[in-house]
Length: 166
Image (cartoon, rainbow, N blue to C red):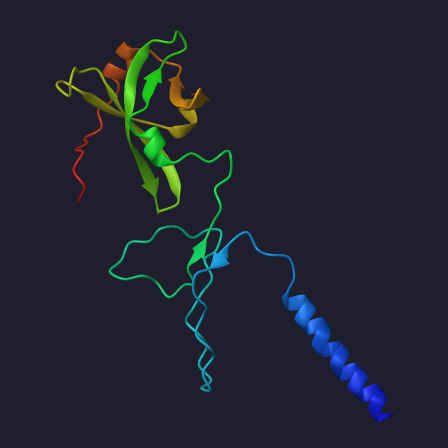
């Protein structure tokens, strides 16, 4: 084989590898890179966050690469939900969203709604399944709708809730 052909093949491989590495950008970007592999035969402990991962409980951050995400138009921030009035289908106020219950750091499994009470006195908290609530955003304000009455919420099983962070 001619030296010119060998050099051309090596250059072609190097250019195609570089072009492959410059492929389409991901929807997330790492904040830091994983440590360079060491010369030892041990595998790296750094892992990629997967689709089934969520916020974890622990004493320190796990050895994962931090990634940033982009918010989509259908996403809603929890800060926009907490304090939102809840209405029934007759447009009567039946409660207010107080908090969200998050299972395993990734799935909202309940919405804490206060029903009844006045100025924080005599409030009755209930835990509602998220699929029971419809959100509406008009003119920059958020509303939540649920197909029930204030009396039904007052008679629902109470949810023991304190607003303290712990």
